[in-house]
Length: 79
Image 1: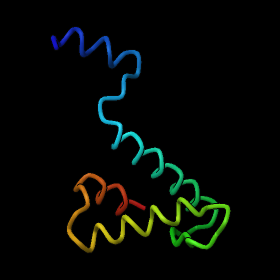
Image 2: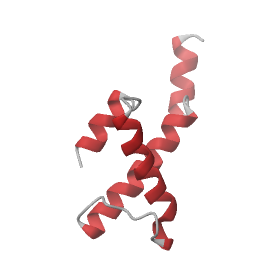
Image 3: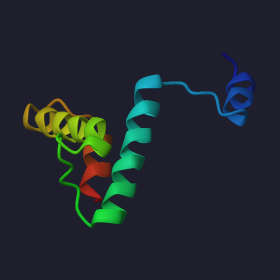
């Protein structure tokens, strides 16, 4: 794609990477959870935040396996 075409796509909010888009969307949910609860220990048993709790657990597992994206590590570390 030409740089002009890329700029046009960017100007309308085109999503280039669905995985990253989804990751940052859930990260925003974690930020909101932390803002409300003052911690990031989301329980997988919390019915209101069950999927968020599962996501947090998966991030921890990925981190321990050295399988977490370095940008994601920085974002999570900022919390």
